[in-house]
Amino acid sequence: MSLRAFGPGKVILLGEHAVVYGHPALAGSISRGVTAHGAPARECGLALPAGLPVAVRRQLRAAFKVAAELTGRPAVRVTLERDLPTSMGLGSSAALSVATARLLLQAAGRRARPAEVAHVALGMEREFHGTPSGVDHTCSALGTLIEYRRRPGAEAGRARVVECPRPLHVVVALVGERSPTRSTVAALRARRERWPARYGRLFAEVGRVVHEGVAAVEQGDLEALGDVMNVNQGLLSALGLSSPGIDAMVHRLRQEGALGAKLTGAGGDGGAVVGLFERPERGVRRLTADGITCFTSQLAGPLER
Ligand code: MEV
Image (tube, rainbow, N blue to C red; front, side):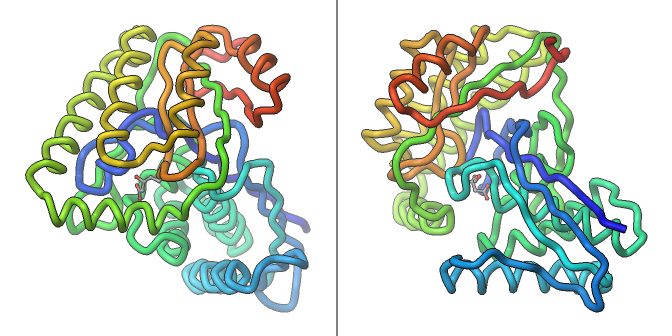
């Protein structure tokens, strides 16, 4: 019998990087992600497409080995299919980890509850990112909009589902080449160690605006949420995480009618920019006509038909 499991990608609406240092973040799963397919086999294995760079193959195999061990090596051959850009700050490794974890748990005849999926996915994420805050794979495992906070010394952070009375539509636009999350996080860590007071103040301010943003979401106040996103972008810029390309895309999304726009994920030289829209269709059409890779997703609220 063939099996199938999905792991959604995510956008961080507020709080990336500061979340690594124990401040809250607001993140939502998106409609794009990674699907894992499983076919019966003599032993547990991952089939990789030809042409992947050696370093990527090695990392994927190492991560898969961790998940296989954690799930008792069920006899299944796994293939992966994605409709999410990789390494652009949209949680592609977390989506892959969650899809794989879910599939292996199913194949092992175990219930793929979010906590168990998240535990296996974290093992994989550590192979990809070293010491992730956990926001990406937790958001993917829960598949909804969450406020997330890392807990010192604990494996799993605290996640709370955030409800919004109105639909939250975002446009995600991609900019240039992105530096690996691991190196962007490490460079920021070095700056923070060198100038702890200044960087500590900026992280604390990010934490404060996340609280304000979560309250805005719960009240359905999209204008306030958009403003908080703009302020968060200013703070990310002050932390040295934006770039001329990202800045230009942030301004372009605002011109197209975004209530707020900011980088999402790790940032650096390039990556993804997220804009909050009441009506995203026109903006997506105009960006696409200009050759910009972009898509729209609904993060929360009553589904619009
Ligand atoms: C990456 O999607 C989010 C970061 O905050 C890193 C992390 O939380 O581990 C940059």
